[in-house]
Image (cartoon, rainbow, N blue to C red; front, side, top):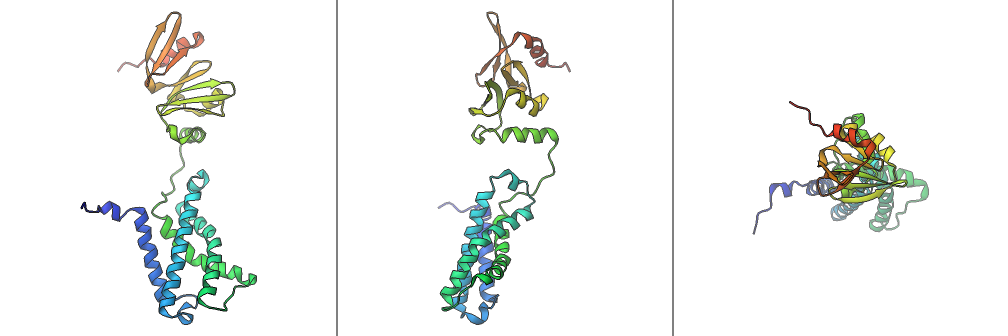
Length: 256
């Protein structure tokens, strides 16, 4: 039987699980919020293990929902954890209210005490969110240069399955057909808008309907009166007569 690698034991998921188990043991031992006096040890440990496990599941679900959002990805790591903890505390508050009624018969939480209960729950849930999210969240990065920021804006409109290996852009009425090494997709954008967003060094216009990525050009060829650009991957792009001189100058390699 193959041994489990060190990387597996220190994966983000297991790292967060170790943390929440340790937190549940600590809370069961310490018995905060009056649970030490009101609950016997077996009940106390069961109560806190149940609460921490539920809080972990809610924090993880909240994190999965928020992570794809670009605005969430730009948050500093600490702010992202506070947001996850604050949101997941809302459903957790009702779970705790139910659990208190289950372990302490006759105990109820009237509406007027919900805010106090939320603050108590949030104080623990923020710790759970930190343990859950810290291994998964990347640190906040320095602001991107303007060109890289424009590139990010463009690729936010492109399906993620196409990745970022641009070959060419093809205008189709008021839409744009984006060609990459992974395939093609139609997006709601005009060619002129795309050319204003993309860095000039990335490519050039070869036709009134076509833009090509400079590094993907395999060569030029003639077919009758038509000049064509051959791109890596087999795609062929026509060169407009008014663009021919500019295309040739873009493909000239400076001598050393």
